[in-house]
Amino acid sequence: MVEPQLHRVTLPNGLRVVLAPDSAAGQASSGQAPVVGVSVHYDVGFRSEPEGRTGFAHLFEHLMFQGSESLEKLAHFRHVQGSGGTFNGSTHQDYTDYYQVLPSAALERALFLEADRMRAPKITEENLRNQVDVVKEEIRLNVLNRPYGGFPWILLPPVLYSTFANAHNGYGDFTDLEQATVDDCAAFFDTYYAPGNAVLTVCGDLDVERTIDLINKHFGDVPARDVAPRPSFGEQFPSGELRGKHVDAHAPLPAVALGYRLPDPVGELDAYLANVVLAAILSDGDAARLQQRLVYQDSLVVDVHAGCGLMGSPLDARDPDTFTVTAIHTPEVGLDRVIGAVDEELEKLAADGPSEDELSRVTARWSASLYRGHDRVVTRTLDLGSAELLHGRAELISELPKRIGQVRAEDVAAAAKALRPEARAVLEIEPAGDENATGGAA
Image (cartoon, rainbow, N blue to C red; front, side, top):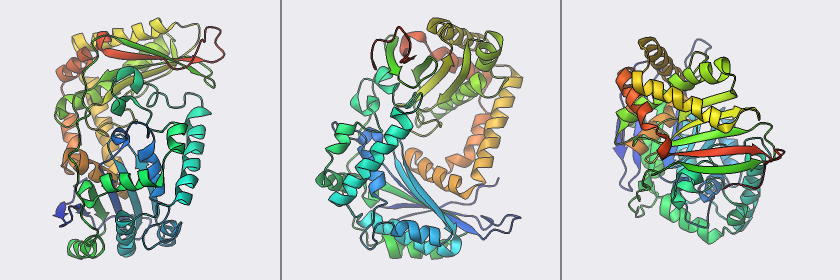
């Protein structure tokens, strides 16, 4: 894949714009109409929530779909779907994104929709109470009433981290959500949803000059507001092994999550990418080390996974970020046997590194998945926007395959050596039916 030339503009109100023209977008052999992706990434996520307002960033994402200055509730949905497009939004640790992909002839409609809610979303008591109920139901569905709900992204951070920003439940506590007020929402919007705190990305079948004119037309009069410097969420690495336990009312089998701190994904990118390769060597595919050892050889677990990033994807957050190993095992297999086997495999990699075959296999697979993902306009649009926001360089997404390919065996060995038992968190999931179950999260 040849990455198209990127174009940047910053509006007087501070809005950063990234344009990625690609006239081939959507013109596949299927005869699809040319398409364009439009996304807005705001520099606010779970970690920016104030104490007493857990889940607020995600709640606000919902409110941004409830109407705006010129549009009633559900109008955004109708306009995008009526154009043959799709849309959504998502909340992450360090950002919240909104996007739509639609025929390129409807580009101006998408820009108007995003500008209108950047200018003034419709925050009313009715909308707030309605969306609090929607979010609570989402939590019931995805966390409270699901086996291994919130595992590990909600349950592991309070064991590994000590500060509220890094440790709290980003989905939200019901009491905090219910106590949210319209004034809280207005203050959150004023603080974090300023144009100067956002990146607008347009990708696909577009004319650069015309698109810049349309962006100025629709976003140019969104009032500028002060943007406070982003605080650091850094904290010390653990000085010993940290342990926690959570009783899961729906889990059929015990589970464990190991959490380790990662190198800074922005300031230490190459060391971070060595951990991405390490995770793939450990659990990506049947030939991976943990799959072979824990599943096939010793029959210790029924499922095992290693990865970078609490939300399931690498390079999705700033520092601090988390390396996780999760495993589901049968009751007769003790927790210590599973952890011991993981430690032995890490020790082997720390001592000898991966083989050349392992290294080439996982780097080729990872690069192929990047190319495959970026063939989709929606993935390319979102990845360009998040890379620009988090790293200041949207170009990074086209450089990643080469940089991953440059990871050496000794880099992976060093990454494995850094995952030390004395600087990690261990979260044990205990099924509620276990006769030894004694309580909730430790």
